[in-house]
Structures are given as C-alpha cells and as structure tokens.
Image (cartoon, rainbow, N blue to C red):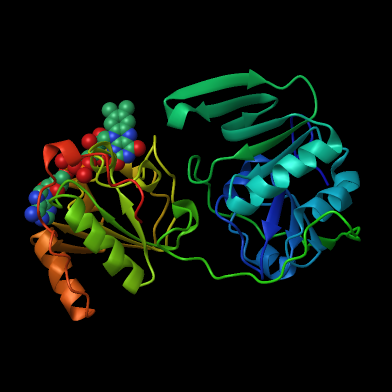
Length: 328
Ligand SMILES: Cc1cc2nc3c(=O)[nH]c(=O)nc-3n(C[C@H](O)[C@H](O)[C@H](O)COP(=O)(O)OP(=O)(O)OC[C@H]3O[C@@H](n4cnc5c(N)ncnc54)[C@H](O)[C@@H]3O)c2cc1C
C-alpha cells in the first residue's frame, strides 16, 4: 500500500457492521488515501467510501476486541511511520493500544497531520499545539474539523488482509447495549436537536432533552447556553466545542454564528426555528420556521405526549446558574 508523497502513512478505521465511524473519510484523506478497514462488514464499508482512496485493505476481524486487534494489526502496520485513526469512540479505544503494542507515542486529538507536522487541539480547543514527530507515531484526528473533497475516481478493489486475533487480550463482551441518544457522544449522533439563546432557560433545555429523546435525537446547544450553565459543556457544538456530523440537525433559537456552524459537519437536513428569518441558521436550513422556538418546543412536546415540567420556561434564579451540568 502506498500513501502518496511524504512519510508513509495509513488510516486505520474501526468498522462495526459495515458502518464507518465519524471522521473516517477525513482520516483517509489525511492519510493520502491509504486505508485499512478493520472490524465487521469491512467490504460494505469500503464500498461506501466517499473520498478518493489509493489503496484499501480490509481485515474482517469481527466485533471490537481492541487489545487483540492491536496485537494482530501491529505487524501489518509496522512499515508505516504515521498511523492515523479517527478520534471516534472506537478510534480512541484502538489508538492507545496500537501505540502501546508498537511502542510509539500517541498524539491524541489532532486537527491536522502533514508530513510529520501535527497540530493538537488542547484546553477545549482554546490552544493549538504544534508538534513535529521525530519518529513513528500513532495519531487520532478530531472528526468534523477538516472536511473532505468529494470522490473523483473509482475506488480500488479492497485487498483482504489475513489477520488472526490472538486470545487473552480482552475482556469477554457479554452484551452490547444500543446507545442512548441522551447520553451518547454528540460526535457520533446522527440526529441532533439543539437549542440556543432563543430558548428561555434551563427549564426549556430539560424539555428539549426529553423531546429530543422521544424522536431518537441527542440534545445539543450553543456555547452561549453552555456558558450560562444551562447545559453541560460537552453538549455545545462548534469550533471550541464538539464537532458533529449528523444527518438531521434541528436548531431552536440558534443564530448560526460561524463558530457554531463550523462544528456542524455537513448535515443532510437542517431545520431551523427562529423569529429572525434572515439569520445565518435560517439561510442554511432546508426547512426554516419563523416562529417562537419555546412555543414550538412546547407544542411538539404536547404532540408527543410529554408534559412540560412545572419549571419549563422559568428563567433560572441567578444564584442557581451552573447547577445544570448533569442532564442530557
Ligand atoms: C473564540 C470564540 C469561540 C467560540 N466558539 C463557539 C463554539 O464552539 N460554539 C458556539 O456555539 N459558539 C461559539 N462561540 C460563540 C458564538 O460566536 C456565538 O455567540 C454563539 O454561537 C451564539 O449562540 P446562540 O445562537 O445561542 O445565541 P445568539 O447569537 O444570541 O442567537 C440567538 C438566536 O435566537 C433567536 N431568538 C430569540 N428569541 C427567539 C424566540 N423566542 N424564538 C425563536 N428564536 C429566537 C434570535 O433571533 C437569534 O437568532 C465562540 C465565540 C468566540 C469569540
């Protein structure tokens, strides 16, 4: 496998049941098009690649057992100076194990990798660290930061790699529970219902969390709202927050500031509810509803059989701000 110019590098993409994790396409692009897809349904996942790929290898090694995977994949990956993984939940599980087995440093949460030059987001994205790799490394890349160019040519035929998972590296998996949209990592969520300063306070966000859960969506927010303490900080989306890439994004009372929308990825459908028909969020919406967002939220809740809390819509007493960090 060749990774084009620069030091040899490869993207390692953990695949579950044929589904690529968030950030997979960007990681392959950053690796110059050389990819190893490992997991279950890897051929199906390879066929779904939307970026140009120079070479695609598949290792059909079943459900995640990251210790065993790392031991088995390490010999295949040894020739590569840089091993890039998406910083998706599975990528973050596999990367440190690969780094340990291969005795390499792990550079986690990078926004960019270019010919041994790595940029790492630190302190919630407030600082970008610049590191020059002086030897072989494992790097995880934050999803949704770089974007990708659409595919321009046919994909190469995937080359199956012969890999055998050794026993004794992992705990036995007894059951896998489906993710709860209310608590799952926003970066992985395919349906997000988010609120901004157009909602009235923490009561509206409690209701938003319940309405979102009822339609199988995760609750998101803007930084303004998180800074108020109305939601936990891991719920806000944007350049300094979580980078997401949902299929459906519903924005209630969000203006669409550049720092927010740059973290949105490329949602297939955007619905925006706002009293200002000309704000940027309305301009990027497929469905723009010019109306009162708290009112619409309550109507939607009633339609779903959800009764608003007694405190919905009440602004929080000043002293209580910052107490709301655990729901959602
Ligand atoms: C360095 C830096 C980094 C930042 N990083 C981020 C980031 O990562 N993520 C992020 O989100 N922000 C970030 N911000 C803040 C960003 O610039 C915006 O201030 C923020 O996104 C705005 O949030 P908002 O849309 O909730 O609020 P506003 O911009 O105040 O918008 C509120 C919206 O609600 C609408 N509205 C008001 N009342 C109603 C109603 N009754 N019904 C319906 N609509 C209503 C208004 O028309 C308006 O469009 C950052 C800022 C800086 C300086």
